[in-house]
Length: 291
Image 1: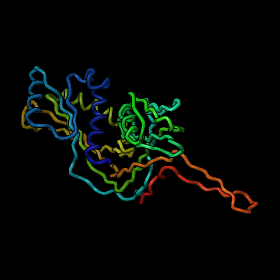
Image 2: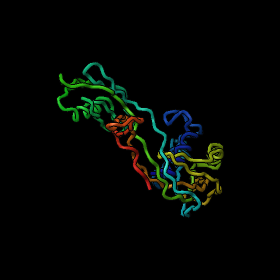
Image 3: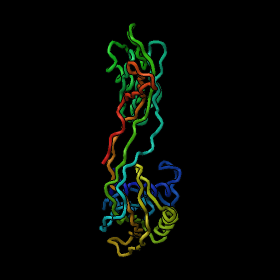
Image 4: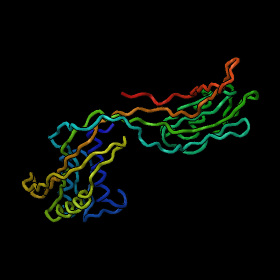
Protein backbone atom coordinates (compact mmCIF):
# COMPACT_ATOMS: atom_id res chain seq x y z
CA UNK A 1 0.00 0.00 0.00
CA UNK A 2 1.07 3.59 -0.53
CA UNK A 3 1.95 5.39 2.71
CA UNK A 4 3.95 8.34 3.99
CA UNK A 5 7.25 6.45 4.03
CA UNK A 6 6.88 5.58 0.35
CA UNK A 7 6.15 9.25 -0.40
CA UNK A 8 9.42 10.24 1.30
CA UNK A 9 11.42 7.52 -0.45
CA UNK A 10 9.97 8.37 -3.88
CA UNK A 11 10.94 12.02 -3.49
CA UNK A 12 14.40 11.01 -2.24
CA UNK A 13 14.80 8.85 -5.35
CA UNK A 14 14.03 11.84 -7.56
CA UNK A 15 16.71 13.86 -5.76
CA UNK A 16 19.19 11.01 -6.17
CA UNK A 17 18.48 10.81 -9.91
CA UNK A 18 19.25 14.53 -10.22
CA UNK A 19 22.50 14.36 -8.23
CA UNK A 20 23.65 11.06 -9.75
CA UNK A 21 22.20 11.00 -13.29
CA UNK A 22 24.29 7.92 -14.19
CA UNK A 23 23.29 6.02 -11.06
CA UNK A 24 24.70 6.00 -7.55
CA UNK A 25 27.89 4.35 -8.75
CA UNK A 26 28.47 7.16 -11.27
CA UNK A 27 29.89 10.65 -10.75
CA UNK A 28 28.04 13.33 -8.81
CA UNK A 29 26.60 16.31 -10.68
CA UNK A 30 27.74 18.46 -7.75
CA UNK A 31 31.16 19.62 -6.65
CA UNK A 32 31.12 17.08 -3.79
CA UNK A 33 29.56 13.66 -3.18
CA UNK A 34 26.16 13.58 -1.50
CA UNK A 35 24.22 11.30 0.83
CA UNK A 36 20.52 11.24 -0.10
CA UNK A 37 17.96 9.50 2.07
CA UNK A 38 14.45 9.54 3.50
CA UNK A 39 14.29 10.60 7.13
CA UNK A 40 16.26 13.04 9.30
CA UNK A 41 20.07 12.97 9.41
CA UNK A 42 22.07 11.46 12.25
CA UNK A 43 23.68 14.38 14.07
CA UNK A 44 27.13 12.83 14.58
CA UNK A 45 27.51 11.72 10.96
CA UNK A 46 26.20 15.05 9.67
CA UNK A 47 28.66 17.03 11.81
CA UNK A 48 31.60 14.87 10.72
CA UNK A 49 30.69 15.09 7.01
CA UNK A 50 30.20 18.86 7.07
CA UNK A 51 33.45 19.41 8.99
CA UNK A 52 35.33 17.24 6.48
CA UNK A 53 33.83 19.18 3.57
CA UNK A 54 34.81 22.50 5.13
CA UNK A 55 38.40 21.36 5.69
CA UNK A 56 38.71 19.75 2.26
CA UNK A 57 39.41 16.29 3.70
CA UNK A 58 36.35 14.50 2.32
CA UNK A 59 32.83 14.42 3.66
CA UNK A 60 29.42 14.55 2.01
CA UNK A 61 26.62 16.97 1.33
CA UNK A 62 23.46 15.68 3.01
CA UNK A 63 20.04 15.73 1.33
CA UNK A 64 17.27 14.36 3.52
CA UNK A 65 13.54 14.13 2.83
CA UNK A 66 11.38 14.44 5.95
CA UNK A 67 7.69 14.74 6.76
CA UNK A 68 6.40 18.04 8.06
CA UNK A 69 3.90 18.34 10.89
CA UNK A 70 0.93 19.43 8.80
CA UNK A 71 -1.52 16.85 7.46
CA UNK A 72 -5.18 17.01 6.56
CA UNK A 73 -7.68 14.62 4.96
CA UNK A 74 -8.52 15.47 1.38
CA UNK A 75 -12.21 14.96 0.53
CA UNK A 76 -13.72 14.94 -2.91
CA UNK A 77 -12.17 11.73 -4.25
CA UNK A 78 -14.23 8.65 -5.01
CA UNK A 79 -13.07 5.46 -3.34
CA UNK A 80 -12.29 3.48 -6.46
CA UNK A 81 -11.30 -0.15 -7.01
CA UNK A 82 -9.13 -0.59 -10.07
CA UNK A 83 -7.02 -3.37 -11.51
CA UNK A 84 -3.35 -2.49 -11.81
CA UNK A 85 -1.72 -3.10 -15.21
CA UNK A 86 -0.55 -6.68 -15.48
CA UNK A 87 3.03 -7.54 -16.31
CA UNK A 88 3.71 -10.10 -19.01
CA UNK A 89 4.50 -13.59 -17.70
CA UNK A 90 8.22 -14.26 -17.38
CA UNK A 91 7.87 -18.04 -17.11
CA UNK A 92 6.88 -20.44 -19.86
CA UNK A 93 5.44 -23.96 -19.69
CA UNK A 94 5.97 -26.12 -22.78
CA UNK A 95 4.75 -29.63 -23.57
CA UNK A 96 6.76 -32.15 -25.57
CA UNK A 97 5.20 -35.59 -25.69
CA UNK A 98 4.67 -36.58 -22.07
CA UNK A 99 7.13 -34.04 -20.60
CA UNK A 100 6.48 -30.54 -19.26
CA UNK A 101 9.36 -28.03 -19.15
CA UNK A 102 9.36 -24.81 -17.14
CA UNK A 103 11.61 -22.08 -18.58
CA UNK A 104 12.07 -18.34 -18.38
CA UNK A 105 13.17 -16.07 -15.55
CA UNK A 106 11.91 -14.75 -12.19
CA UNK A 107 9.16 -12.17 -12.59
CA UNK A 108 5.70 -11.22 -11.30
CA UNK A 109 3.29 -13.57 -9.53
CA UNK A 110 2.07 -16.07 -12.12
CA UNK A 111 -0.32 -18.98 -12.56
CA UNK A 112 0.93 -22.17 -14.24
CA UNK A 113 -1.58 -24.72 -15.49
CA UNK A 114 -1.96 -27.79 -17.66
CA UNK A 115 -4.49 -30.55 -18.18
CA UNK A 116 -3.83 -34.02 -16.80
CA UNK A 117 -6.18 -36.66 -18.17
CA UNK A 118 -8.61 -33.89 -19.08
CA UNK A 119 -8.63 -32.22 -15.66
CA UNK A 120 -7.09 -28.81 -15.01
CA UNK A 121 -4.02 -28.65 -12.75
CA UNK A 122 -3.05 -25.10 -11.73
CA UNK A 123 -0.42 -23.60 -9.41
CA UNK A 124 0.17 -19.97 -8.39
CA UNK A 125 3.86 -18.98 -8.28
CA UNK A 126 5.03 -16.15 -6.05
CA UNK A 127 6.77 -13.13 -7.53
CA UNK A 128 10.52 -13.50 -7.86
CA UNK A 129 10.61 -17.30 -8.16
CA UNK A 130 12.51 -18.79 -11.10
CA UNK A 131 11.84 -21.82 -13.32
CA UNK A 132 13.68 -24.36 -11.14
CA UNK A 133 11.65 -23.49 -8.04
CA UNK A 134 8.45 -23.37 -10.12
CA UNK A 135 9.16 -26.83 -11.55
CA UNK A 136 9.74 -28.22 -8.05
CA UNK A 137 6.47 -26.70 -6.85
CA UNK A 138 4.62 -28.11 -9.87
CA UNK A 139 6.04 -31.56 -9.12
CA UNK A 140 4.47 -31.44 -5.65
CA UNK A 141 0.94 -31.29 -7.14
CA UNK A 142 1.63 -33.73 -10.01
CA UNK A 143 1.46 -37.25 -8.46
CA UNK A 144 3.50 -39.93 -10.20
CA UNK A 145 5.67 -37.40 -12.08
CA UNK A 146 9.46 -37.27 -11.91
CA UNK A 147 11.67 -34.19 -12.22
CA UNK A 148 14.96 -33.73 -14.03
CA UNK A 149 16.21 -30.15 -13.81
CA UNK A 150 13.27 -28.06 -15.00
CA UNK A 151 11.44 -30.86 -16.85
CA UNK A 152 8.63 -32.95 -15.39
CA UNK A 153 8.16 -36.44 -16.83
CA UNK A 154 4.60 -37.79 -16.68
CA UNK A 155 3.83 -41.43 -15.87
CA UNK A 156 3.15 -43.71 -18.81
CA UNK A 157 -0.64 -43.70 -18.54
CA UNK A 158 -0.98 -39.93 -18.22
CA UNK A 159 -2.37 -37.66 -20.93
CA UNK A 160 -1.06 -34.06 -20.91
CA UNK A 161 -2.43 -31.07 -22.81
CA UNK A 162 -2.93 -27.29 -22.82
CA UNK A 163 0.06 -25.89 -20.89
CA UNK A 164 -0.49 -22.25 -19.98
CA UNK A 165 1.02 -19.39 -17.95
CA UNK A 166 -0.73 -16.14 -16.95
CA UNK A 167 0.22 -13.30 -14.65
CA UNK A 168 -1.83 -12.84 -11.50
CA UNK A 169 -3.63 -9.54 -11.25
CA UNK A 170 -3.80 -6.93 -8.50
CA UNK A 171 -6.83 -4.93 -7.38
CA UNK A 172 -6.02 -1.53 -5.89
CA UNK A 173 -8.65 -0.11 -3.52
CA UNK A 174 -8.25 3.55 -2.59
CA UNK A 175 -9.59 3.91 0.95
CA UNK A 176 -8.37 7.39 1.90
CA UNK A 177 -6.58 10.49 0.60
CA UNK A 178 -4.59 13.00 2.57
CA UNK A 179 -2.34 16.00 2.01
CA UNK A 180 0.97 16.13 3.91
CA UNK A 181 3.83 18.59 3.96
CA UNK A 182 7.12 17.01 2.85
CA UNK A 183 10.45 18.85 3.09
CA UNK A 184 13.68 18.33 1.14
CA UNK A 185 16.49 19.44 3.46
CA UNK A 186 19.93 20.41 2.13
CA UNK A 187 22.95 20.48 4.48
CA UNK A 188 26.23 21.85 3.13
CA UNK A 189 29.44 23.50 4.34
CA UNK A 190 29.11 26.89 2.62
CA UNK A 191 26.52 29.25 1.14
CA UNK A 192 27.99 28.72 -2.33
CA UNK A 193 27.66 24.94 -2.17
CA UNK A 194 24.19 25.21 -0.64
CA UNK A 195 23.14 27.34 -3.59
CA UNK A 196 24.67 24.84 -6.03
CA UNK A 197 22.67 21.97 -4.53
CA UNK A 198 19.50 24.05 -4.26
CA UNK A 199 19.66 25.18 -7.88
CA UNK A 200 20.13 21.57 -9.07
CA UNK A 201 17.21 20.22 -7.05
CA UNK A 202 14.92 23.13 -7.93
CA UNK A 203 15.50 22.48 -11.64
CA UNK A 204 14.87 18.75 -11.15
CA UNK A 205 11.75 19.00 -8.98
CA UNK A 206 10.02 22.09 -10.39
CA UNK A 207 8.62 20.26 -13.47
CA UNK A 208 7.36 17.29 -11.42
CA UNK A 209 3.60 17.32 -10.97
CA UNK A 210 2.93 13.75 -9.83
CA UNK A 211 4.76 11.08 -7.84
CA UNK A 212 4.15 7.50 -8.97
CA UNK A 213 4.11 4.74 -6.36
CA UNK A 214 4.62 0.98 -6.44
CA UNK A 215 0.91 0.21 -6.00
CA UNK A 216 0.26 2.17 -9.27
CA UNK A 217 -1.39 5.07 -7.40
CA UNK A 218 0.03 8.59 -7.64
CA UNK A 219 0.54 11.66 -5.48
CA UNK A 220 0.12 15.31 -6.46
CA UNK A 221 3.29 17.32 -5.78
CA UNK A 222 2.77 21.04 -5.11
CA UNK A 223 5.61 23.46 -4.32
CA UNK A 224 5.04 25.43 -1.11
CA UNK A 225 8.10 27.43 0.01
CA UNK A 226 11.90 27.61 0.33
CA UNK A 227 13.59 28.55 3.61
CA UNK A 228 17.28 29.37 4.17
CA UNK A 229 18.52 28.44 7.65
CA UNK A 230 21.69 30.32 8.58
CA UNK A 231 21.50 30.09 12.38
CA UNK A 232 22.94 26.60 12.82
CA UNK A 233 24.65 25.03 15.79
CA UNK A 234 28.01 25.00 14.00
CA UNK A 235 29.49 27.78 11.90
CA UNK A 236 30.12 25.50 8.91
CA UNK A 237 26.55 24.16 8.59
CA UNK A 238 24.41 25.86 5.93
CA UNK A 239 20.89 24.52 5.38
CA UNK A 240 18.10 25.01 2.88
CA UNK A 241 14.56 23.60 3.12
CA UNK A 242 12.38 23.12 0.05
CA UNK A 243 8.82 22.33 1.20
CA UNK A 244 6.09 20.65 -0.83
CA UNK A 245 2.53 19.53 -0.26
CA UNK A 246 1.86 15.96 -1.41
CA UNK A 247 -1.67 14.67 -1.86
CA UNK A 248 -1.58 10.89 -1.93
CA UNK A 249 -3.84 7.90 -1.43
CA UNK A 250 -3.85 5.19 1.19
CA UNK A 251 -4.59 2.01 -0.72
CA UNK A 252 -5.22 -1.66 -0.06
CA UNK A 253 -4.21 -4.28 -2.62
CA UNK A 254 -5.59 -7.75 -3.32
CA UNK A 255 -4.29 -10.45 -5.63
CA UNK A 256 -6.77 -11.79 -8.19
CA UNK A 257 -6.60 -15.01 -10.17
CA UNK A 258 -7.17 -14.90 -13.94
CA UNK A 259 -9.58 -17.18 -15.76
CA UNK A 260 -7.28 -19.30 -17.90
CA UNK A 261 -9.87 -21.45 -19.67
CA UNK A 262 -13.60 -21.94 -19.93
CA UNK A 263 -15.13 -25.38 -20.45
CA UNK A 264 -18.09 -25.30 -22.83
CA UNK A 265 -20.61 -28.13 -22.72
CA UNK A 266 -23.40 -28.31 -25.32
CA UNK A 267 -26.48 -30.46 -24.61
CA UNK A 268 -29.86 -30.95 -26.29
CA UNK A 269 -32.88 -31.89 -24.16
CA UNK A 270 -34.66 -35.11 -25.07
CA UNK A 271 -37.20 -34.47 -27.83
CA UNK A 272 -36.09 -30.88 -28.39
CA UNK A 273 -35.81 -29.51 -31.90
CA UNK A 274 -34.75 -25.97 -31.02
CA UNK A 275 -31.27 -24.51 -30.65
CA UNK A 276 -29.17 -26.57 -28.18
CA UNK A 277 -28.64 -25.22 -24.68
CA UNK A 278 -25.19 -23.89 -23.85
CA UNK A 279 -23.69 -24.26 -20.38
CA UNK A 280 -20.42 -22.72 -19.21
CA UNK A 281 -18.19 -24.08 -16.47
CA UNK A 282 -15.31 -21.94 -15.26
CA UNK A 283 -12.18 -23.89 -14.48
CA UNK A 284 -10.47 -21.23 -12.38
CA UNK A 285 -11.89 -18.59 -10.02
CA UNK A 286 -12.97 -15.27 -11.39
CA UNK A 287 -11.80 -11.98 -9.92
CA UNK A 288 -13.11 -11.58 -6.35
CA UNK A 289 -15.67 -8.90 -5.72
CA UNK A 290 -14.59 -5.77 -3.86
CA UNK A 291 -16.68 -3.47 -1.77
